Length: 249
Image (cartoon, rainbow, N blue to C red; front, side):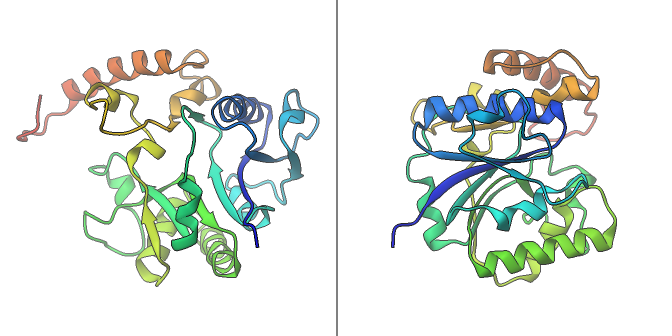
């Protein structure tokens, strides 16, 4: 039986829907023919008709994406947060789902206490995973995993879903794969250090793409704008970091 592949995004509110439409344009350019669906509370918003199918979100809480994962209509699903840009074809990325039910990338800022949070005190080398880019097999095993993730998230009453995800992965026997950084590129300035044969930058995932929604600056639309802002922020952070270490610049 032929497996169906597709991308889903979840967007509530006009600002996030607008970002989802922006992400969709980059997927269409780099991966023509790949199905892309949207879960949203604004099915008639401008640009939404560009998605292959539009589905209603089943709730209104800040992490409603947890309710949408198992509702995807595809067998192999790539979930993307709205603050992403796709720079290259996905190639055989979806084939990972044949071997691993879930594929995610490490979170960044791993020296930060926020990224260490969770019910289990795990080794430094087992940080939180970033839930903004996830490839998964849409089957009963993952449906049960997502349901438990949502149950614990509701029970904990927190704002972030990633501490619960970390705990579940630590406890679970679920086979999961850690994606290379080019599939969840959180720091565009990493490209300054990469050589041409190191990697193919594929998915950029940056909170700066939604900084205008948080009152932190103008709308960012391009990779060049991201790189410029990140270089400024990078220098500021190194100057502010007072920790002595061999890697200090």
